[in-house]
Image (cartoon, rainbow, N blue to C red; front, side, top):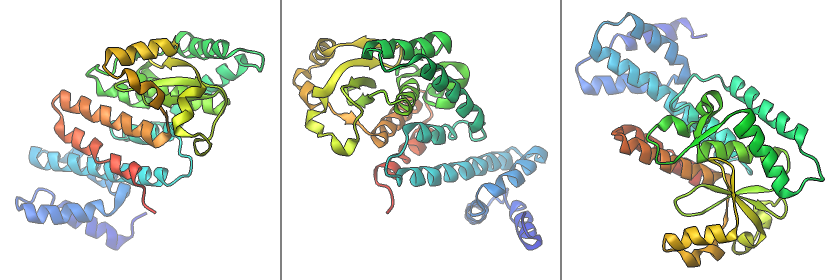
Length: 297
């Protein structure tokens, strides 16, 4: 709870939100944002009684910036982990569009997915049988529907939206797929196929530190499109690369770690925002990438 003196300072600052002097406003904004998320209820309360469109716009921006700062802090913390989870990062990034989402509800739904898959898996199943079970749970039982990465709806990049609406794309469904497989010791990893986000079934569960990058592709049994669960073999991927003028790239395909997966998600989300005429959001999304690529020590 804020101290009385702090309350007085906040009230004084809020009275200056509609100050026409931009320099004064920027000083006020900086001070308000220094309170972190604790300032949001004050901003929302003022917005509800404010009838000045100019001030309302500033308040909306301050609320957004408060959540955005917290998102940045959480991503930096995530990137410092030795083996960060892509699913955890996806939940953090979802706050960009849904800052007050119910994380516990999303985790509960994910646990239902995990439990349903776990009940069906056993040690006697072949790799393809394992994948058929996972696909059946995700696409038939939970009725997830995958959309192309070119779909102009940015919501498809937010994993909470995918869990709640059953609508997603290769990244959000793929991240759910990866998280399930990691928890259940199914050797599924993302592969750096150009212009696609695709998964691969490996011979064994590998730690990235133990896998020589130039040998990674040699351990793949088959590939999986997380958009729909379709399974592809080596020749299918070779044909895709040939069609895109990158036939010789196959031996160089590598596993993607969580940071690389999230980087690709952010890059594609930024492109989507650009394509629908929201460049400010694209810039904010792009500015998150360095936070996970070069974590602070």
